[in-house]
Length: 81
Image 1 (cartoon, rainbow, N blue to C red):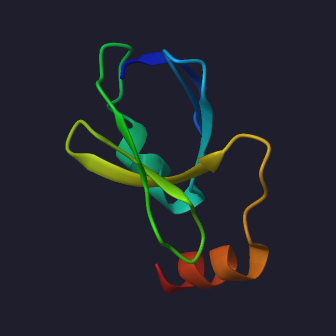
Image 2 (spheres, rainbow, N blue to C red):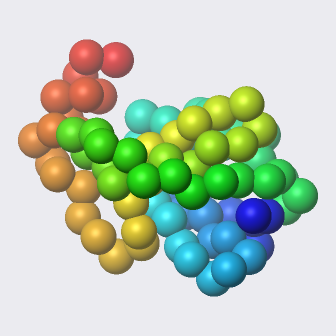
Image 3 (cartoon, helix red, strand yellow):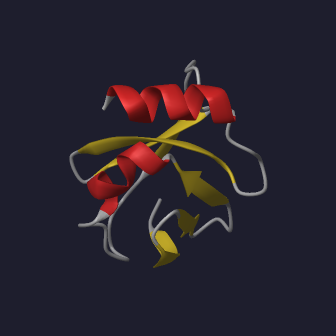
């Protein structure tokens, strides 16, 4: 599925209208995404996210827009690097 909008670095909207928040530690992996980038949404089991967006040689953790990140887990992951 192609990207409809990626004007905010932490949110991507896909052509089906779904909007996804990108995990803060994975934002650097999205820098090369363009409107023609094909992404696949995959459900995953992860401490901080429910889905992964896969494409352009990257797999980034994501949650649906409007949901909240589990703060303690995010801080722990970001602290570990």
